[in-house]
Image 1 (cartoon, rainbow over the protein chains, first blue to last red):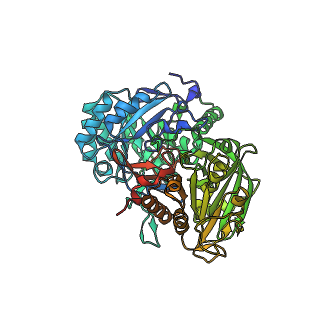
Image 2 (tube, each protein chain N blue to C red):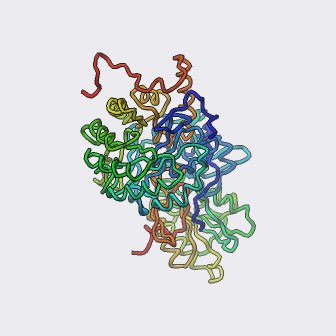
Image 3 (cartoon, each protein chain N blue to C red):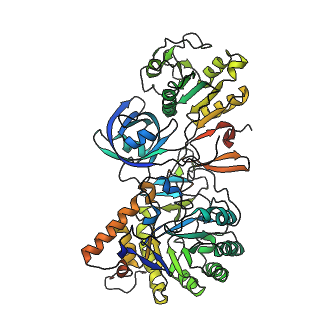
Length: 321
Length: 295
C-alpha cells in the first residue's frame, strides 16, 4: 500500500486496519469512492479510509427533491439511501475501486435485521476493508434511526451482523437518543469492533410562504459546523464506555479544520470523519493533514495516536452531567 | 442522450473578481479570472462558487461567457437568497473559490442546424454561451428567444435581422447576439418596448409555424429557465415532434456527484431513476424529465 503522501506520524490503527491518515471521508458525501477523483489534485491517498454510500439489499430510488438545504452553519439532507443495491455494489462497483489508494468501508443499511445481515454477508465475501452498520440514518421510514435509538434493537442488529462477518464491524451511532453511552455499551456486548460517532441530527426547515417543509422528506439530517460541539461531547461520552474494551472511535460531525479534528482526537477519537466540509472545500483533507502534522511539531509529539483521549477535564471525571 | 455521468476534470481555482456589475431587478454580472475553468467550460457547464467564506455550501451558477485566451468566465445571477446576497457584496480585486467547469454540456447535432435557444431570466446565460459556440459552427442557424420579468441585463435594441412569424412591433433584440449576427427576440409580461407581451414559447410557436416540414426536421430546442417555462418547452417539443435539451437546477451540495443531493426524476430504459443535476446533467433530454410528462 502506498502511504507515502501522508506524514507517517499520522498513520493510525483502526480495528486492526492501518489507515494512512486519521481522516475518513464519510458515507453519503463521496458516492462510491470515485466521484471526487474528478477534481484536479484530489487524491484518495490522502485519506485513511472512505465510507461508501449507504447500501441496502435492493436498489433504492431515495427521497423526492429537495434533498439538501443550507441552514446556519450547516445543512439539512434527506437523500433516503439512494443506492443501486448490494449485489451491484459488490459485483460492479467494488471491482473498479483502487484498494491500493486507501481503505474502503461499506455502509450497511436495511429495513429489517435480516436485511442488514444479508447485506453484511454480501460485503463479507468481497474485498471491502470493513463494514459500518448504519443504525442511525434519520431519513428512512424503517430501520435506520428507528433501530439506532433503541439499545435493544441496536444490539440485535450488531449481534446479527457480527455472526455474518469477520470483517471489522463499525457501528454508527445516532445522536438522536437519550443515552448514547448506554447504546454503545450494548453494541460492545453485541460484538462491535468500533464506533462512528455521530450521524446527523434530525431537523426541519420551513418555507414560511408556502407553509411547508423545504425538504421533500419533510425532515432531514443536520450536519456541518453547527453540530460539532454536540458531536465532540458524544464522542467523549462513547469513549468513556469504549476505552476499557479497546474499541476505537471515528469522531465526526462538523469537522472543517485541523483544530476541529484535534478536538475529536483529544475527546477520544482514533480517527476523524470529514463530510459536509468537503462540499465547501473538496481539497480540505490535505489541509487538515498538514495542520495535524504542524500540531505534532508544535507540541513535540512523535505520533497522532498520543492525542486520543488526552482530554483533561476540569475538576470532574465525567462530561455527561 | 448519453446517460453515463460526465467525467471531465473539475478544477478548484482561487478566482479573482475582475468585474461585478449591478443591473436592475437585483441582477449581477460577475466576471472571474479562472483560466482552467475558462479553458475547459462548454455551453451548459456551470461552476460551484463559494459566495462567502462563512457559508457552509457553495452556489451553482451557469456560465454565460468565457474567454479561454484571456482566462476569464462570466456569470449572470439574481439575488434570491442569503448566499447570492453575500456574493453580491464581493468586490473586484477580491478572490473567491470556484469549482468548475461542472456538468454535461449541451450536445449539438449537425443534422439539426436550426437551433432554437430559449432562455428565461437567469436561464439566459447558458443560451448566450451556446449561441457563441454555434456561431462558429458552419451551417448552424441559431435563433434566440429570451424572456425576463425584470429589465433585461442589457439594453435591448431594434433588430436588423428578420425573424419570420414574429408579431408586428416585436423587434427588440439582444445587442450582443445582433453583433454576432444571431437573430433574437424578447418576451416579457412587464410591457417592455419592442418585447412580446407573453411567453417565450408563444414566439417559438409563431416561428415554427412558418417552417416547411423539411425545415422543421432540422430544428432542435435548447432551453434554460424557470420550471413552468421548461415544462412549456417540453410540451411544445412533443407537439412538434422536436428534440429538446433542457438545463435543470436543484439545490446542490457537493457539485461533483458525491452526495446525490441534487437529483431529479428521469425516465430511463430501466424505469424511473433519480439522476444528479450536477454530473448526470444539468442538461437532460426534455422527453425524459418525469416532471414534464403529460398528466
